[in-house]
Amino acid sequence: MTLKLLLNPKRANRLVQQKALYPNGFGFDNVLEALNATVFESQGAATAYEKEVNRSIQFVALTNLMNLTVSKFSIIQVKAQVNAMIEKLSSAFSKKGDDFSKQLVKEIKAFREHPEKFTIPLPSKIPDGSPIGSFQCYYDSHNSK
Image 1 (cartoon, rainbow, N blue to C red):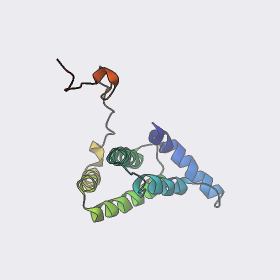
Image 2 (image 1 turned 90 degrees about the vertical axis):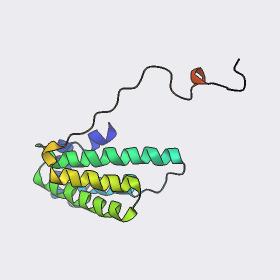
Image 3 (image 1 turned 45 degrees about the vertical axis):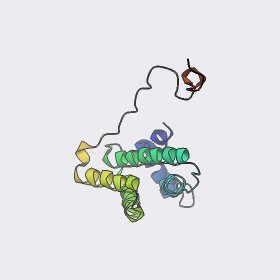
Image 4 (image 1 turned 90 degrees about the horizontal axis):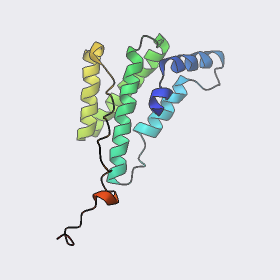
């Protein structure tokens, strides 16, 4: 939800306009720089779980960036800045070589080849029942009868 609001086409347009009026002010380029540093270049994930959460955030951020380039509400300046960032990300992912990075490169390539087929994936519905790991789901094989 946060990325959807942050990367809203109309908001991005206003930030480009803001930077044009006040060159030393905050603009959409600053949003992209901060997003890149925080989401894509951050090495802060310490545990395997945190790394997986970060990968999910990276995918959502990438799809929201792609959405900006195909949105009929995005002005050309926004599309140009986002396309440059996507190219930068694609290059960075290509150099990493892990399976997740390779998949993101494939996603970008598919998007570039057929942007008209692009849609933002909808989040999954939360399944019924208690969350995994809650005390209601606890099973102790040593004390079962």
